[in-house]
Length: 351
Image (cartoon, rainbow, N blue to C red; front, side, top):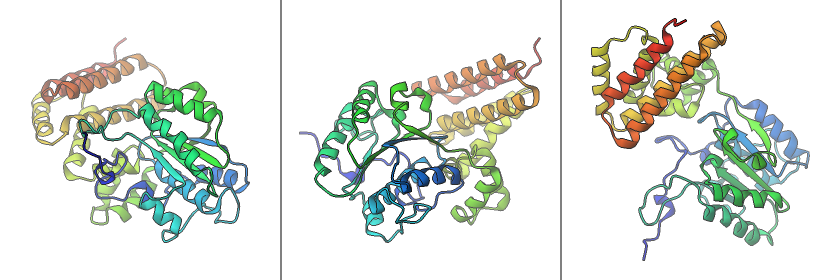
């Protein structure tokens, strides 16, 4: 008989170690436009039955979803609550949401495989089918019911089709919130049944100011560097705050900026440092790809589309290198050198 998986054993897929989970976070930073739009819809009494909350990873999608959920569970789709949809942390609804004991809220996410006791790679159809039981079980009770799918990108095809059936005939006084880092990958029929709430990356100054609260001991110069490296994502910034990962991000940015004339011995030394950090290669690969994307965007603004195909090829090559090396647990040296060579080729003025 498989051992029962306890809720405290389930990995929090969107928690940054050492910082509050989005369900415990009551401040939403830099997403006033999306919040205002949601507030108008909910307080008017005519909200959509499904929101597709999209945006880069770490920009506050889950924080916004929990904020909307708390308001609906506390005030319903009325204008009796605050205009900014805030619910006090000591409110009974807030306490139940934090304790994962709110009967009107269902959160669908990747879980633990009871056989391997490891995090599953997808949201399965069984997880989505449990929503039907959730809505059926709570139908007799008063008030709203809210389901958060975190993230919809993780659904396998069967799960996506099962969700589509629920969205086609949504229960009364219910709201679905689908979080997505890449909404273009979702079924068009799912997207068409949702209203979009797009979250934007935070600007450097806003993010650096916010980091004063989260990282008070960090120097102002490091907070600025962190804000620039994180691509406007507060989640990414907090993950980068570790000294080793911050160093990897800086190394990745330097590798891209110096790719036209790479220092091969220095790259070998970098590979050795990456190999000494737990999870170093996947982390370095993420930062290398981010730095390359930033470089491509800056170049496009400056020079237009000229030579863009070579940059796209470099981006694809780097992603393939990192994915292959991570999957096969390869040594980082050849992967890093090969990736920088691909960027070097794109940097040349080839006619």
